[in-house]
Length: 345
Image 1: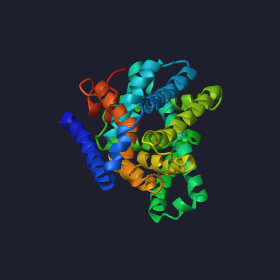
Image 2 (image 1 turned 180 degrees about the horizontal axis):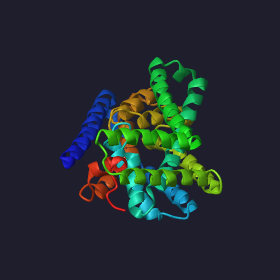
Image 3 (image 1 turned 30 degrees about the horizontal axis):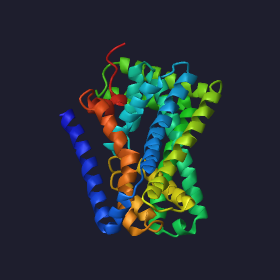
Image 4 (image 1 turned 60 degrees about the horizontal axis):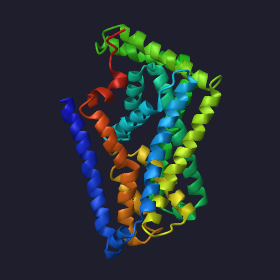
């Protein structure tokens, strides 16, 4: 049953992505599109390959930096596997919600206490989303073109509201640990009263996880601050490479897009993918790219640019992550990792 649910998640990611790609390609492609593909040079493909590798290495490097700061360094090779598995689960879940528990599962499997694994992943998400959210607000205020688009404004209001909610939760937990534990205990009490949770060992385990998390966050914001700042720098490089991907793809197709305009478009687009209700942002990513770049590049390049952007920015990672995941671990077990009961001491 769990295996079938996992396959359905993959199925919908593929169906929605393919349907949107076909619509965009049919609506924008012509003979000039084939000419652009024929004249892609080898050095252009090399740059795209290097960017793809750089993105995944920087993502993994954040894990290595943060865990090394804790004195429990995860090797880069295993960190690469962790983020690739995370990308696979992000692709098959709404709001990319599967990425975080999948990465925590992998880090915990390596031997990192779950509370510390949560801390590492929280820092990764907060730094990336914070940079994208701040950039998006700046673009909306500074760019009359984007600010005048009512649809984009409403979409970005949704993105900002989601980010503010997550950031508020993070700050509450960080500054109010006692109140957080009180709320957790109240929730556990109700679950025990209804017979949903029976073992008291579950309470002990959750308290131990919370203690590890609070200790890790306290460490990062005090003695481990250099490691935290280095991770922020790596996150900045990671976001920068994300912005470089689309202009390099368009350049490979023989057109020089305005770099600032391309960055502005992606500052709007990328945060939308984190909060898209579709699996892995499928549909939203393809349609959003086509909408935002339609006025920046020739029409015959829009569809093929979307395809290449998704291949080098998502599909390659998802495919490799699937190899590490499917057949070697229970998809539903990973997705329910944070809520499962600890059976062993």
